[in-house]
Image (cartoon, rainbow, N blue to C red; front, side, top):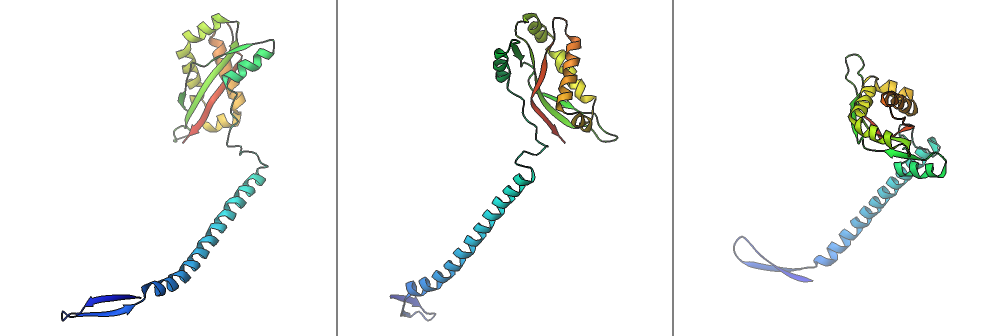
Amino acid sequence: MARVKFRHDNGKFYSREQDYGERRGRKDDGSYKGLNKMLLLILIAMLIIFVGGTALALAKNGGELSTRYRKSDPSPKQVVSSSLKSKQSVSAYTELGQLRAVTKGMGDQGGSLLVVSPWFSYPSSDIQLYEELAQKEKQAKSLIIGYFSSYTKEQLLGMGEQKVKEGIRDKINEQLVMGQISSVYFDDYMFFE
């Protein structure tokens, strides 16, 4: 027990004994237990919702990613190293970097922004083709941007990524004199609204 002094309005001091610890401990202990139980129940409910939602989403898609996500292309190192095992070894031309193109708009709406990072594979023994690709790098970038700007987002998505790659490959090969690129790959292929 503690003796508490307090001053009254008339200036005299009064004191009384009061046990703060026991009264506070008993009162707060009960309210904290109830609060702890409530918080624990909320945490368990959130965990069940999170785990259940994740399981439901995976079960709905058969454990696969949604079709809105693209499967990434192999890296240039992977393509080159896997080609070494076959008789037709290839090299990768990766100097184009990241390109931004605006797709064709529909009606009064503007087009969508497309960010793409293309690279080409070509026969590794063809040094002249590499030099031609390096000289015509700006032309290749312009062809790729022009290709995307001639289609709407819906048309590009409808054609599929493989058909788009083949179209770009054919456009690039039309401009080349020293050889032909064998494939087009995309590190990035993302549409933005």
